[in-house]
Amino acid sequence: MGRHHLRRGSDDYGHAFEHLVMQEIIAYRGYFRRREKISYWHTYNHQEVDAIIGDAKIAIEIKSSEEVKTRHKAGLKAFKDEYPDCRLILVSLDPITRPSGDIELIYVTDFLKMLWGGEIF
Image 1 (cartoon, rainbow, N blue to C red):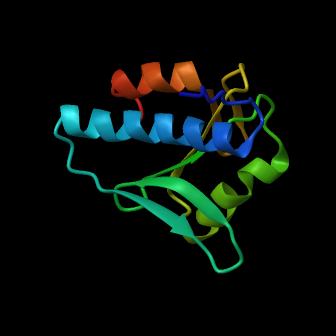
Image 2 (image 1 turned 60 degrees about the horizontal axis):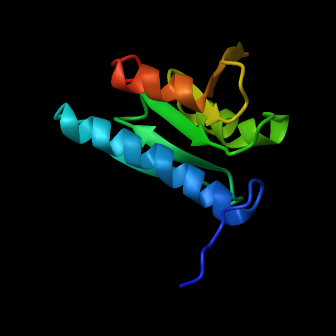
């Protein structure tokens, strides 16, 4: 059987990274019997947010990039226009967790620690 290697920067790598983070969010919700629904949001002009927690309380975008760029924040900014009280989080491989305006940029390992520590929802 052939081995498949995920190449960093490839679409497959990005999908796998997003899937890993989503599975952790789902596992946390189930393990702690949280009732918040997890949904997805998108617009007709292709703006999207990967995970919406609860009734637009938290919006989480997941990017496998090692450097967050302005374009990575577009979906969260569009979501914020519709839901101004929402907490905005961008999870990535950018190693420095920091605020960027009203968006929290969180390194993936920091995010997982925060998630399982009850600091996300």
